[in-house]
Amino acid sequence: MSRLEARPEPSRAMMLSSPLIAAAAMLVSGSLLFLFLGQAPLHAFYVYFIQPLTSWYGIGELLLKATPLILCGIGLAIGFRANVHNIGADGQLTMGAVAAGCVALYFDGAEGPWLVPLMIVAGAIGGAAWAAVPALLRTRFNTSEILVSLMLVYVAYLFLGYLVHGPVRDPAGYNFPQSKMFGDAAMLPLLKEGLRVNAAFLLSLFAVAGAWFFCRHSFAGYRMQVSGMAPAAALYAGFSEPKNVWIAFLTSGALAGVAGVGEVAGPLGQLQASVSPGYGFAAIIVAYVGRLHPVGVLLASLLMSLLYIGGETAQIELQLPSAITGLFQGLLLFYLLAADLFIHYRIKPRAPALVAVPVVAKETA
Image 1 (tube, helix red, strand yellow):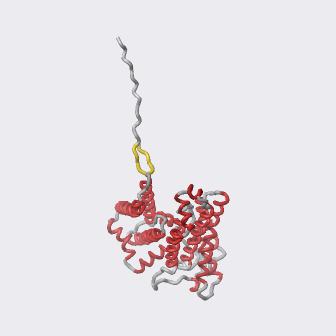
Image 2 (tube, helix red, strand yellow):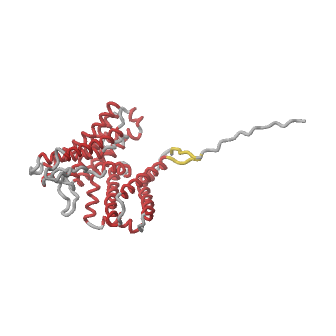
């Protein structure tokens, strides 16, 4: 029999290289999966990972899908560093999209450069307000922020569904659950003509830079890191846990709300029954694959975005099911968690138990 024993000090080199190990293991498992589905692995990998990047349009789609992952992943990583687990980024993204969409519809027909900034501010406030609910319940009643933030995701979905089926439904939309299209003044400018990637990608890069500065050069970032690595030391130093919870939730909620603005004021151009294919949940994987570091989150978001567009390409070219994308995401997270397990623990065989042998005294003649 064997048992897990904590290592005295985890290897920093292995912690940095574990995402690469997890990605390599994902590719090996993917080869077996493609063989099982009757596909040549090399050709399938080319279609999945290389073909989407062979055109400017494909690169634009890569950056477009990476944008909400970066924004949500950065916010989640800041909280995870302090052991504050916000699982509801998809709901906060949805509420940010709702707030920005309502502003666009209220000022329908208005012209001027002020409308898009107003939508961005409204989206950030909407996402932060939705994130404030689990923060308040955690700090006042010690509820589980994981459960509350997760359940609020589905409340946000239902609220968006109510709006597009009723108050904001387009009367000329043939009864489809969607609002009318936003005006040109309510749309984010494109980075390159002919591509769908827009200015929200630049906002995500500013978020990466801001998060790096916050984590490395601010006392609040230092306080949150200490609280995550050594809670007892943070408590002894007098660091406020409620303050960490509020900073984590409001920051991640605001960034997720801005990600929602990037969707409705970008490729969608309106409110629909669904504004996210699960970016908020995928951002959890992004945060951990990126090792909770802003630059790592940026790189992990590009990888996760490639899995999204590669899955879409594989559906068209190879006739593979849409679930292939979620399967690759799950494999990546599984192997990363497995690598982290053996980075922090090692297998130690148990010493065999000694069996007492009874000693029988010989009879003397």
